Amino acid sequence: MLTQEQKDQWLEIMMKADFGGGAGWQNRIHSDVPSFMNSTVAYKPEHLVGLDAVFMGIPWEGMVGVLPGVYASTGKKGVYEEQADLRAGTYDAPDYIRHCSRLYDGLIDPATSFFPEVSDDFNMGELLQIADYGNVEIKEWDAVETMDRAYKMASDIVKGGGIPLVIGGDHTIPYSTFKAISDNTQGDMGLIWYDRHYDNVYGGELPYPHTTMDRPNSGNALYKMLDECKLDPSNVAMIGPGGGDTNFREMTEVMKMLGIKVFTITDVEEQGMKAITEQAIEIAGKNTARTYVTLDSDAMDPFSFPAMRWIEPFGISARDIKDSLAMVAANLNLAGFDLACVGPAYDTHQLGGTVAARFYIEILKQLAIKKQANKGAEK
Image 1 (cartoon, helix red, strand yellow):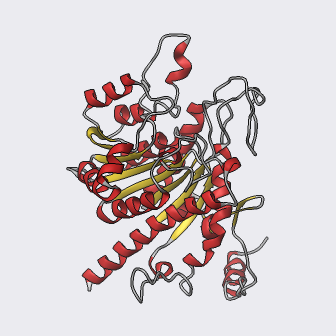
Image 2: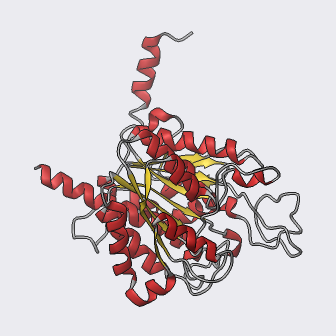
Image 3: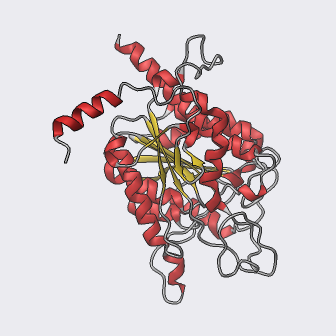
């Protein structure tokens, strides 16, 4: 056997070698899937300590409508694969968005991560330490176990001091991440939720045979966050609901009963996204320690974001969403962020996937700006 002295000397010698050598090495989380922006891959909780932000994927898709029709997806298909009428495939999104993020590999390299629109000397790669924690291991057909696993991974990130940047998956995913942050930090939280739909289905115990619907799903995540976490309805702002599919008058009644502020798509059109975001920031930030942000892709107009699982035309433009996310990250203590319901099967020339990757980068940019400002204040 090797002695400890031999191991130490061997390690010391080999650490001198430059294994990168500019040969285009690629960090992968599994098979041919790269880490987000080719960032360092974290394999254990101890690898997360001291990081500013950490990516994790939750390739989960729960409810899929079963009606006569055609199932369109590039990923795994369930037993009703030829009958699902509603667009599916969000389980492909975490890996797909990572592939699209390769366009921005240089943004974690101090030599190339330059943003002239910020300042002449702003370099994100010199300011932030990020990593990719891989994907939650999904247990098919078991939402409870899968969300428990997601909760543990997100908790690892929070305990390490980093901000979870989550790649979904359908809109079940905010629940586990938000709960992990709430359980592992002090103080109340705020929530900004971008969505075309209210997603406020009752999530408590239901009488048999309706018990399937009380398990974590894309409709009851908001209920479970309000019920189980340090979140008051008065600190929730929802942006983007509008007419179309799956919104009912009773859902509006629930929001009014709870006192949750809803900015409809008409409010956005009439007031402008900047004014709406300013109000949302005030709501989410009032007497809270940090704010979580969740973005359902269907809040956006498919003409500017085609990679949409649940399509609703005439939503918010991708540029307005980008600007809004930047405002939120700049003005609030960001607890975490997720993007849900991206449908790679419906994308056009990787346009939506690249825009999705850019949303995360815009948030990273704001975190770097704040970190640079804090460093300047300390001098």
